[in-house]
Amino acid sequence: MENNIQLKKATLADIPTIISIEQSVSGSKLYSPMLTEGEWLEALKRNTTYLIEKDGEIVGEISYEFKGPSHAYIDGLAMNPKFQGQGIARSAMQLVLEELKDMDRVDLVTHPLNEKAINLYKSFEFVIESQVENYFGDGEPRVVLAKEKNK
Ligand SMILES: CC(C)(COP(=O)(O)OP(=O)(O)OC[C@H]1O[C@@H](n2cnc3c(N)ncnc32)[C@H](O)[C@@H]1OP(=O)(O)O)[C@@H](O)C(=O)NCCC(=O)NCCS
Image (cartoon, rainbow, N blue to C red; front, side, top):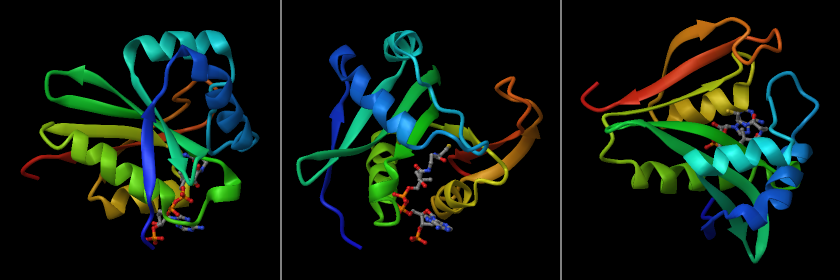
């Protein structure tokens, strides 16, 4: 499906909007949302967070940070459930990966049972590298997925 979406760089003023997106996907062990203003104040210092806008409405967010000169880590992707299943996360990933196309390595983590996310990432040629138990300290595992140049 063709999607006309826009990525808008989030500022501190957008923190309540970002938290409401995180709240909309909370309550599942498959995703560890960031729900406090303090966490987002810290996160926005180190990462680039985009609000995903479609038809004038904020429908989700995607974020990444640099871990090295040629290494980016996608640290967040969440779509309001009302807007899931329409190819919007795919379009947002496409735009972010285009922005990161010169990186030697792009990686991220997700829950091993997060089938939707894993399918999405695999379709962009991310491969599962490893599984880490109790990754965020909540007792739940995460898998590391990476997309590397020349691999
Ligand atoms: C994962 C998530 C971001 C996908 O958002 P979305 O906008 O619904 O995804 P899209 O419609 O763009 O679909 C992209 C791909 O995801 C996968 N996918 C989406 N819904 C799926 C489903 N119900 N079952 C299996 N795979 C699914 C597919 O690979 C799909 O590609 P395809 O439609 O070409 O087959 C969304 O489900 C979400 O926000 N989940 C909660 C938060 C989360 O888990 N974030 C990722 C954590 S790292």
